[in-house]
Image 1: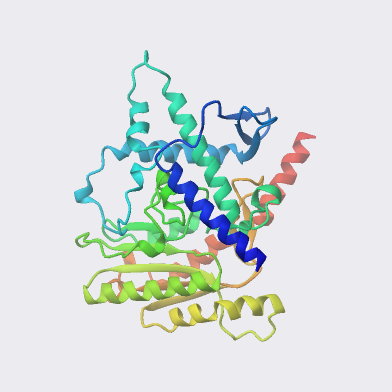
Image 2 (image 1 turned 30 degrees about the vertical axis):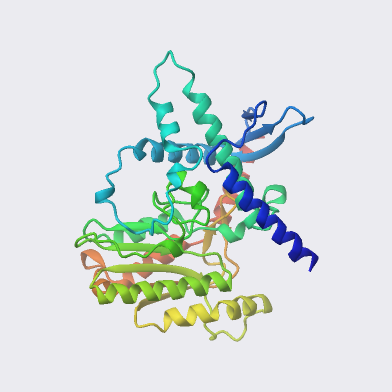
Amino acid sequence: AELCRKTNLACQELLSQRDRYRRQSPLKKGDRIYTETSANSPTLTILYSRKKWKKPFAFKINQLHYQKLKDRYVQVHENEGKRDTSSQSTTTVATKDFSSYWPPSSLISYSYHKKDDSPSKDTILDRSFNVIVLALLLRYSALSGGQLLDDLRGGGMQGSIHGSVFQVLQTRFSAGNSSWLEGFASPFNATLSRFASVFPDLDWHFGSVGTFFDCTFNSDVGDDSEFIEANPPFTPGIMQAMADHILRVLHYADVNKRRLTFVVVIPSASKDNPSDKDGAAVVKKAASCSFESMVSSSHCTKHIRLRAREHGYVEGSQHLRPTMYKQSSYDTSVIILQSVEAMNEVSGGNTLEQLEMDLRRTFASRHKEELNDRKRKRKSQC
C-alpha cells in the first residue's frame, strides 16, 4: 500500500513537471549543463549543476550514441520548416502538436540560420539538446526499473533487432515506394528514421511519430504499401494490446482494400516443447494469449520460430555499455501479418521461404563474436 501511494504521488509530480517545463527551459538562472570527455574513453559525461550544489549530477553515455542522437536531432529540426504536411502520410493520429513544446522548432531552427556576428548558435543548440538527452536517460532508466544508469540492469526491456534484419525486410518487401515504421523503439535504439515510442513529447525531436497505439495506419498513400516492424517490450499487457490493435487495423485495411504488413517479434508461446525449463514456461504462459491470437489469425502468412541461443538482439542499454549485442535465452517468433491486398506482395519473385532463410541468418547471435573481438583488441594493446 505504501509503495502504491508513493508511486501515485510520483506520477502526479512527473505530470506536473512535464506540464511546467513543456514550454520553457527547465534550466534556471545559474544552472549549467555541459559535457566532458576523456582521452581514450568511448563514453561522454553530461553534467548538470546548480549554484547551491556542491557537485554536479553526472550521466554517462557512449560517444557514438550521443553523436547519433545529435545527428537525428539536427536532421529533424532542419527539416521541420521544410515539411509539406499535405503530402505526408497520416500514419499517426495527431492528438498533440509536440513541435510547440520546449525547445520549440522555431527556436532551434533559428539557431541554424543565425549570422556569424550574432550570439553563438551552439549555446542554444547544445544546451537544449543536452537537456533533452538528460531527460531521455532518466525517463528510459525509470521505465526499466530505475537501475539502468546505476548498474545497467533492465536493458532487456528495450532491446531491438539487428540492423541487418531491417535490411532484409526492406529488400524482400520493396514493391513500390513502400514506407517502413519501427513500431516500438526509442531514440537510443531506433534503426529506422521513422519510429513509434512511448515518450513522443521528447522523442519527436529524434523522429518519433507518436506511440504505436496512436497509429491508425490508415494513410491515403495511393498504391504504395505500408510496413511496420513491431518488437514490443515483452510484457503480457503490452503484447496483448499490440495484438488487438494490429488485428483491428488489418481488418480496416481489408475493408478499404489497402496493402498493410506487420512483422512482429515476440517470445514463442507454442506448447510443443515439454522440456522447457521453469523460466521458459513462465515466459510462454505470459505471452500465450497475444501469441495465439496472432498465429491463429487469417492474416498470419508466416510464422518463423528462432531457437534460444541461436539468435540474438541488440542490447537495450547499448548506449551505456561497451558491448552492443546479447544472446536470446528464449525462443523467439517472427510473425508476419498481412492484409488480403498485401499477401502476394513479396517482391521480385522472392518467396516467404527465402525470406525465412535470410531472417535466420541475420538474426543469428553476434554476442560471442563481439566478445572475441574485444579479447583480440585487448591482447593487441598489451
